[in-house]
Image 1 (cartoon, rainbow, N blue to C red):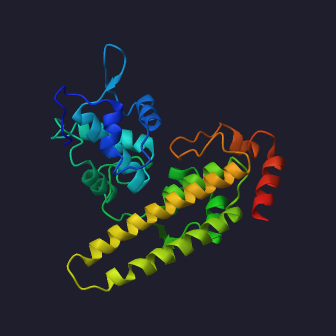
Image 2: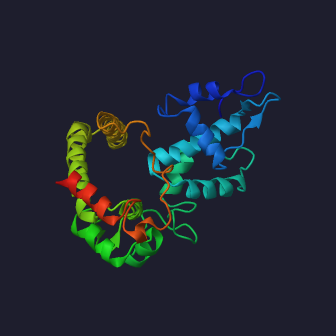
Length: 282
């Protein structure tokens, strides 16, 4: 558990200092957002400043690890936090948080985010019906995502990551984005994955007992760096286009206006949205 200062509480700047090595993107606004969403409830000083105890820091570490390593939506993280708090070790439910996140993602509590019911076993796949219901897909969109390589089946089922892909694709349809427009994203991911595989190949060829674990950890670190570079380049491109004021919106912060998907696109009409996407993919 995080070390406690003599006065028993950390200021928000002290929390940032503790977490920044593992989570470079952590910020005051991120912590405030999580508090607004009800995932954190730090104490307040008489003058109104936030005061975090060690358990608050461990809880925050758990949340950030769940988002970064397993792409879990806030609703699922909130449910897991509630279950952990009621568990046998509820006195310090967030200690060893990253290990807990990994265990849950491999099939523990709520192992299938977005699907109601008890957690299933490790490596559990999704049926077509389960994926459609959990992601809010139509059968037609699912077929298109398969056609353009965004979703791939393992036999007659889908890997767990298919749920996040499908949900994101559904959200993008609200802006007039179709599955065919996402081929460039798929192609870029394949090139980046190939690069990472080539970089860790020498480690995989080693015969040491920890070679496999080292290769996986290195691949994860490389993937994080590639994603950070991708985000920086996109943000730079938006700045050059005069669209930098809003900044990038992380998936858990994004808000889709109700009815946009049914209306065929963002405000301004379906034709305008379609022309924008067509122009970008031309």
